[in-house]
Length: 244
Length: 312
Image (cartoon, rainbow over the protein chains, first blue to last red):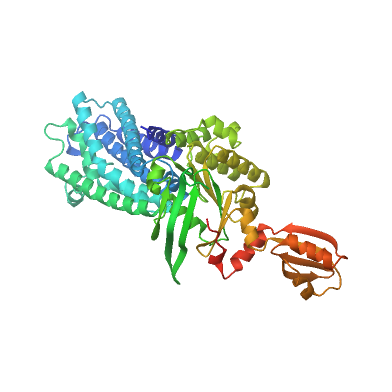
């Protein structure tokens, strides 16, 4: 109850952060129109069976939401360096509530990115049944769990100077090799990408096709990365809170 | 004093912390015992490296002690912090950006069970007219006032300030202490670390002098001065042998600079009577208390540290 004010302020701060708004809202939306508008009438993008506006909508959403989740880590790193974490530790705010707020903020911003890209998708003619929108959103939020934990881990092990490039590079590389900018086609790259949670994040656009959106492999990869990243983040967090 | 009526504020027993350094282990704090009743204002006085900050970190639960134990109002530090009984202003710590002063101070207050009104606190520390300004647009002095407001707004029972006035100008310093005094008057327990002797002298009920990770004196400012040699008598008195002056009752040491002599006295009342009886030609006589600074130098230079401790 008492920590609600803290969460509210964190959300407000994040929305006022111009760098965040550009990186995880304006940038993906701009890129979406650049890549999807020219082939907005393409209903089967490179044999995927998915329309270009839908495919790129989810691809760019993956890019933006990953950036949003990892940005929580950037904030954790900055607040540790500035001594703000230490100041908060002398208030009744529980350490767990601090972390929860960072994750909630990451998710809230990811939802905002998602909502904005959905609007962009509607503009470019994406039409799905309500159940399909819902299923797609659920899968995207689920596939973001490892990134929420990854952000927390980064925030505790990377210095504040390195965190910006680390977040930017991770997001760009993962988006690229997971097919955010174009379907991967079949081959070695796809085999590698299938072991990454970001690949399945982008595969959430398969809701427009008949059958299961994620095969068993998708669920397994997302679950395994979630467990591994949460364990890693929990360890870094515990070590750090003992020392701060 | 009746200990039954005095609630325990801060208690530390056998507190010790050793850091490993490239040149071997360093005992930053080496066996500290401290009992501060609720409502008292106490200065931790010492030079840089005396162990003040490490002691404060252990009192607040930020650093786990290697030895000994801390209780705040009978609770472990973490429990006291969680219960909202503690607030602090540390030496370092920037403010987060993208929030207004008012938003930040209100948020800090909302974490405590019985916060003070935000406007009242902002007025008290002199930033009421800036309350809408974003934290990233503040000068260093303004940011420090915000940090002070963050410590005050929770209405905590124990307030801890680590070198609070470093970097403040004279006016800001005076205002800071005025607010600390009014906070103390509301029954709050206040512990502050400082290396400014006059601050300890003017604003603390009690001074704990630290050197080399130990407490070397603990008592009221007047007691600490008394322990270090009480008072001095200065007089213009040409042509008298120092040995004759040192032989006077109540005088412990005599020095001469030109015609002026300075007598350090254990008992200045007896000394001045004896001086006037034996040297009626003494002129320009001044009796002064030892300044805390001199007491501090005498105390920290003394090899017999433990003997200087008051029976607190």
